[in-house]
Image (tube, rainbow, N blue to C red):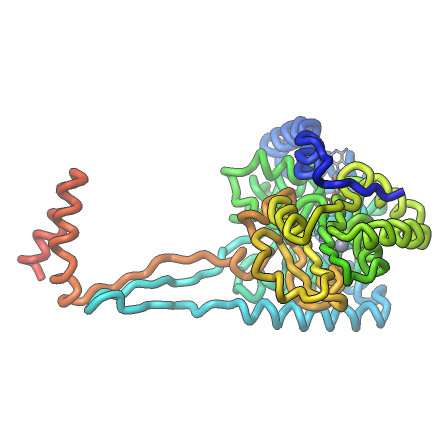
Length: 434
Ligand SMILES: NC(=O)c1ccc[n+]([C@@H]2O[C@H](COP(=O)([O-])OP(=O)(O)OC[C@H]3O[C@@H](n4cnc5c(N)ncnc54)[C@H](O)[C@@H]3O)[C@@H](O)[C@H]2O)c1
Ligand SMILES: N[C@H](CO)Cc1c[nH]c[nH+]1
Ligand SMILES: [Zn+2]
C-alpha cells in the first residue's frame, strides 16, 4: 500500500530523510571507484578493459570497446519503423528547443562613452557524454545530451554507454547518436567510463567536460574526479513531485506518481496535496495501476515509494508550495486547477510541467525540453542540461581613446589603494605612449 504521510506530524528526522533521498548512499561506491580510477590511471586501456570484463561484458578487448561502423549499420537495420519515427519527432523538437537557446556569439554594449563590454561565446572543445544503460534503454538521453552539444558547436563529442552481456550497445541509442552526428562511442559504463574520459588513455583522448545521468558508481567516480575534469550537473536517481489540489483528477495524480517511481528502488516519487480526498483516492488508484506494470518495475515502485516517496498530506496549498520549494524536485507537475496562477511561487525545480496534458513522460520523450535534470535537491542551484552546458563565455572589452580618458583616474586610484604599482604604471605610461 502506498503510504500517506501527514507533513505536520513528521519528525525532523523523518523530514530530513525524505529531503535526502537515496542520493547519498555513496560510501561503498566511492571505495570501488577509488580502486578503479587508480588502476586506470596506472594501466590505461588495459585497466579499462579489465573492469568492462568484470562489470559488464566478459569478452571486452582493447579493440572491441569502440563502436565500429558495422555496429552503427546493424543498429539501423534493427530499429522498428515506429520507433524510428518517434525518435525523429523527438529529435526535431529537442533540436528546435535547443537552437532557440543559442545566444549571439559576440555581445558588446557601450557601458559609458567609449567603453564597450560584453562576452564572446565559444563551445567547449572536447565533451564526454554518459548515456546510462543499467535499468533501461536510454536513447532519449542520447538525444538530450548529443543534440545540445552539437547545436552548441562542440568539436569532439564522445559518448560512453555500457554494453550488455553480449557486448552490444543498445541499438536505438546508436541510431539516435548517429542522427545527432556523434560517431565516437565507447562501450563503457560506470566508473571505468568516467575515469577513461577524465584521465584519457592511449586510445581514448581525455575530454574537458563529462555530463550525463548515472547510477551511484558513475556519481562516485565524478565526485573523485572533480578537479581533474568538469563533471557537469549532479543527475542521479530520478525524483518527482506531483502537486495536487481539490480539483485534481486522482487517477492522473496516481498515474503520474508512478512515472518516476518505476526507474529504480532508489527513485523518489511524491504526490503532495492538501486535499485528503485526493490523497486517499490517488492511493487506491496507484494500487490499481501498479498491477498493470511488469513485476520488476512494480517492485522498483513499491521499494522506492516505501523508502523515499509516497503521498504527502499538507494543511494548505501554501504549505504544499513551501514543501516543493524546500525539496527542489527534479520534475514537478502542477496538476492543479490553474497552474499558471501558482507558477510564480515555484522557486526550486529542475522542470515545471503545467496542467493535465503535460505528464513528465511526455517531457522526457517528446516535447523537446531537456530531460537531463539536477537531482538530490541540486535544482536549488543547477539547471536542466542546455546548450549552455556546452558553451563557455569569455568576457570581452574594447576601450576607445575617449573611454581611456574617462577610466584612467579610477584605475590608477584603485591600483594605488590595492598596492599594485605595475597596474598603475601601465596606465600612466600609456598617457605618454599613445
Ligand atoms: N537526472 C536525470 O536527468 C536522469 C535521467 C535518466 C536517468 N537517471 C538516473 O540515472 C541512473 C542510471 O543508472 P543505471 O544503473 O540505469 O545505469 P548506469 O549506466 O549508470 O549504470 C550501469 C553501470 O554501473 C556499473 N556497475 C554496476 N554494478 C556495479 C558494481 N557492483 N560495481 C561497480 N560498478 C558497477 C557498471 O559498470 C554498469 O556499466 C538511474 O538512477 C536513473 O534514475 C537520471
Ligand atoms: N525520467 C528520466 C529523468 O529523470 C529520464 C528518462 C529516460 N527514459 C525514461 N526516463
Ligand atoms: Zn523517466
